[in-house]
Image (cartoon, rainbow, N blue to C red):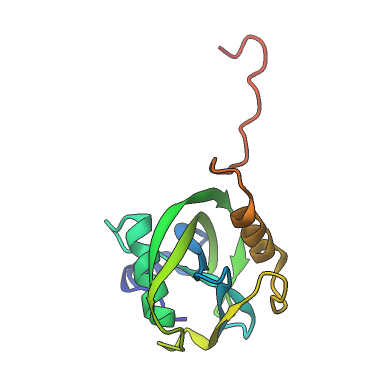
Length: 165
């Protein structure tokens, strides 16, 4: 996966230090209710389309850009599904990262799904009852998108203890 230039600049100073970064993850549906997935070039695994917003870029802008860059699909963002802090990951080069993902429900409005950059080995539309092997995290995001509940999901903060006010 290409490393955004602003992350390269930070890494030049921070080395492998853990970076806490924003991310966007998109659950993209077409008119037939199928989900858009890509087989990632870095892991070979099927996944939801995801990326890192550029400095100053809004999450919805980043989502639309990432979808089009990676898959050639034109999409619109319909709503936030949830906000999640993921577990820390270590990349093969030793870099440590932890992402706070804004997960967005999107709808395809144009384009034809195809491998559109070097981040994907394959791209395709899948019926929700015929998904390829996906990490549990991605299956949970798809399940969240299929719920009728329009409230954004998040991990609630613990209730304050008496006297903490």
